[in-house]
View 1 (cartoon, rainbow, N blue to C red):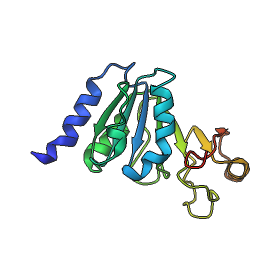
View 2: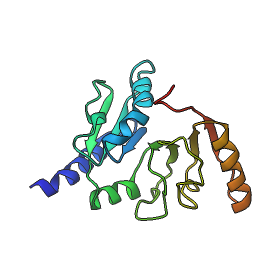
View 3: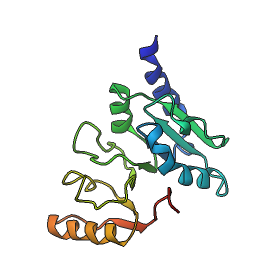
Length: 173
């Protein structure tokens, strides 16, 4: 019975209206919450937006943020997660997981804008794999060092220009 829980969560997510699934946050687990919480709470609180928070861990605090406008789902980290990503229908997907398109987590076959939020302040090329950010449409940069490095990687790799936002670092800001 436990193995079906992620699939039930996926079905429940898909049963939402397209409008309710407009903004989706994905968290690998509780360690992502400190980086996503400021965005989730601002959107669901002062901006009064309904958002979906999807996590791979049952003990992720983002699954119970105390905001009525946050619709939470735990899809695990197995096949249901892979299907979730590949078939996602949403306007925006916000996540702290790099390497989109590099391993088994792929962009949706549907048109979705992917936003990356850094969980680290370090250089984009010191601890991350080559191409870790190449498949994101928007990147919330910690500071100007990320903007410079990402623009340089676009030029060197012949990549299209992405939207780079000097967002800061939630744990310090």
